[in-house]
Image (tube, rainbow, N blue to C red; front, side):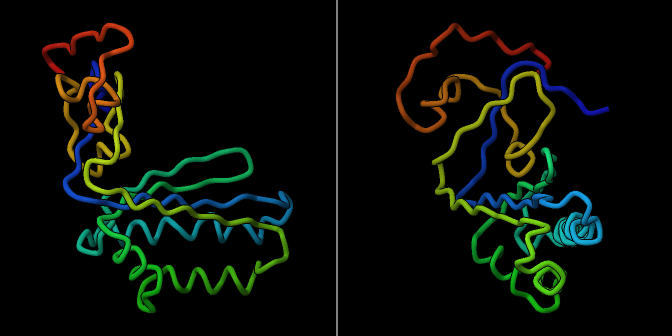
Length: 172
């Protein structure tokens, strides 16, 4: 069972990092032969990257949505993400080529991605009564106290809580 961390926590990561969100949309539900290969292509890539942390992937999490699925990835740098995407010996380039050949512009499957380069200290997050997830798994999971108590404070700004904060339990 996943451990729940009672109370409020945040994440800290040293230096800048990249958030990469990638997904697919099933446009033609009956075209299973088109979208199933796309849906299954990412797992081998992520497994390889998680086994070889020196390539730059810090953490990845899947999500599903109506007619699609996606993946949020945290990378140490854009250069490492780009290097992986274009590496002829890595699994991504072959999957990209297969997609272009099998699907291309036929409209059966949509793909998308968004890349965000985050400068050191230019992010904030909070997790209340949650297991570790997202940036807390890519960086360091830490209690929300003092300079981390509000979103503004986590961004290095001044700001008082909008509502009184509850104290984290002693075991948090």
